[in-house]
Image (tube, rainbow, N blue to C red; front, side):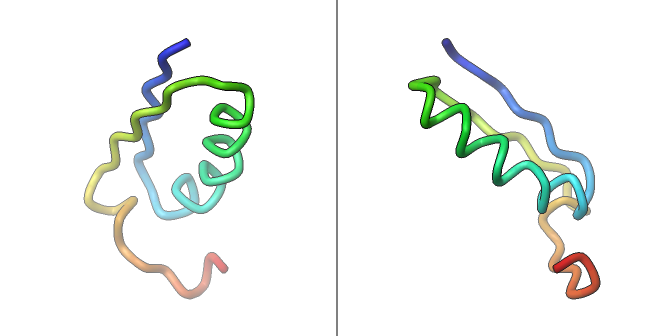
Length: 46
């Protein structure tokens, strides 16, 4: 299956890593689209 994962914020980016890993482990092809806030490093999230 082909999956497009939209990530719109820094917390979503943090949480989506595990979700992406599960899709790939299942054999899915994953394309991730991120907004600018999702790409910014937030030390308070980790």
